[in-house]
Amino acid sequence: MDRSTNLDIEELKMTREQYILATQQNSLPRIENPQLYPVGIYGWRKRCLYFFVLLLLVTMIVNLAMTIWILKVMNFTVDGMGNLRVTKKGIRLEGISEFLLPLYVKEIHSRKDSPLVLQSDRNVTVNARNHMGQLTGQLTVGADAVEAQCKRFEVRASESEKLLFSADEDEIIIGADRLKVTGTEGAVFGHSVETPHIRAEPSQDLKLESPTRSLIMEAPRGVQVSAAAGDLKATCRKELHLQSTEGEIFLNADTIRLGNLPMGSFSSSPSSSSTPRQTIYELCVCPNGKLYLSPAGAGSTCQSSSNICLWS
Image (cartoon, rainbow, N blue to C red; front, side, top):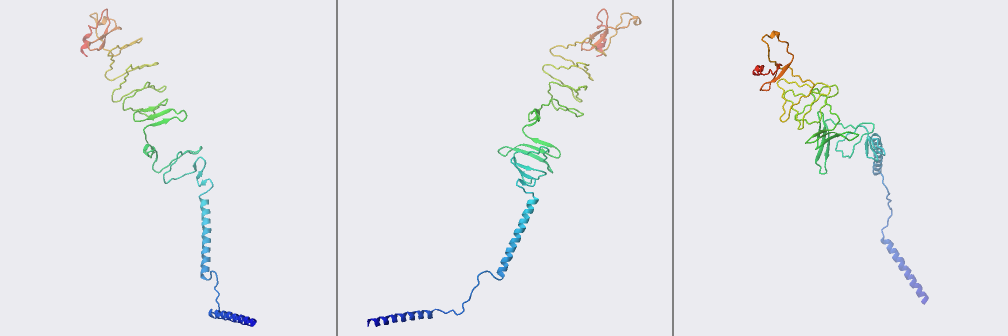
């Protein structure tokens, strides 16, 4: 009894499970013809993708070719490009170079075997400024003139650093051993000239001339004019004045001659034909300072020949 009952219960359970399974299978939709969807790019999309990849490849090849051509034309190297070379001492330019914008450098040097040339269609201007940016010096090389604007302009020797020329607002200094003026009209000074020595070149005459005005030489301790191996000649058109306000005029020579002096007439006998030829004369002075010669006699004959003073 018990065994048969257990078998019935197990059969009922199996029947119930089969029923549940059969019911669940009937509730699901049945797919009779399932469709398969392909994975990937096909058709016109695939052709467009290949076209863009090909275009990108051509562009890369062209860019690479242009880059190589530019490197070759501009002469790019490890040290620089073209005429420009980057060295340990700075930048080196070879050949002609043009700068369209301002160039700021500390020093500019040329090669040892070539000069440095700065060229411009109008002019070349070199400016110097202080830390505030204010202009302190300027050198302009133009087609008509060379102008320098600064507080002091100096020219020195390259080896000894000797001052050859200096100019500022107060004075101009020429420090050369010899100043040579080769102009036909010589040197022209608008105002006074101060010098310790005036000397002409060897075998040349020294001439001090004032064509339209007077020539004045002044010195607080005296003016000395000497000719060591020749004559000293002073000529004038009107009058020659020798004046000493406090001292004397001293003429020291073996022979002193005063030419072209007027001679007074004096005769000791009534008949002038028997008078011997006069060779000795007396120097006489008029009250106004005029000198004249009078025939010498046993005594002074100036008073006898004083009629010459009436003519002056």
